[in-house]
Length: 452
Image (tube, rainbow, N blue to C red; front, side, top):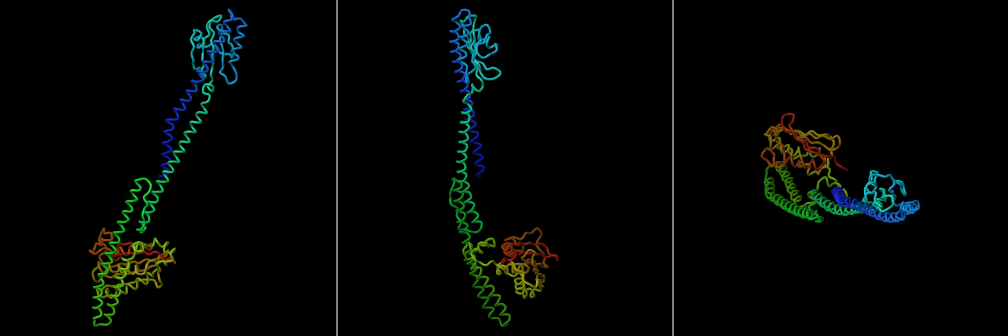
């Protein structure tokens, strides 16, 4: 924008100055020509008077009279002076040689005038009447340089004034452009900070009224977003806190079971549920900036000395498969888990990774009939990181369905795959889905490599 403003100012200023200074230069040139012509005319009339008096002293225009007239003409010629000649009635020329043209013959009729010869310049002709033998003609010839003497310096001065005005206009435009660009850049930085999750970022209104209005509206939008998020997080925390009562009831029911092994297993599940509820409450109570951080903020966490997230994808898959296997056996499902013998380190929080695996397995239980088997496959990526693929023997995704948050296609909330997608993308990976080889659904979550 700054460069465009400079170009626009330069073009506009140049056009305006051209419209003003070009006529001024032409006027100066015309004025110089008129002044030189007036001076030449005055010189011609003075010379005509002197020559007329010298030639009038002799009735026949003898040699003495001509010598006197020639002396007058010679004094009128000199370096830098217009070329001055006198054409006598008999065709003789006093001073520099000059041809007897139609203009000279016209002047002999007693008419003084000025004309521009084809070779350039300007010539003044003044008749001298009352001399012996007829009418003599005084010619004062101005060359192009004498006619427009001094106009070059004037033109250079005018051009210098124009250039100075253009530079002044560019300087003013540059300062104005710097102000506009600076205000726009500060506004952009504030918007970038808001987009990165820093809801404390605010734009300082500066610059022209339009940019100040945008800055105020951006600050108002940030305040509204901050308020909405705070309200939503409070609602999430309140809802999670309400789960404490039914979870406590489940614990009491588990403790009342007669089978100790069954009671211990259910109590462990209830404890895990309590931990999940507590984690939801803690996450909802965190400051918005801290809760909104992702892997994109890893550089800031490193600078602050925080340890980058790291988890073992193999351990998470085996642990969660073991957790869900009793329910799978109860429903007649086969739950297979294939994983390498060693760990596959990925860049993810262990709790978030476990929640992602739970979401993938839970989707199979929610959207396939009893007896439909599932397979978990863990593999290491060539460039680092890992890949988790979950396939089932169910009906698969509906035709044309694109899984998205709030759109599951199976009557649920649609949050399961969104949880997996967020965990994969925050680690630098991705989420893919499609049809399995057996005709069911296949979901592949790729996780980025763990950093030391």
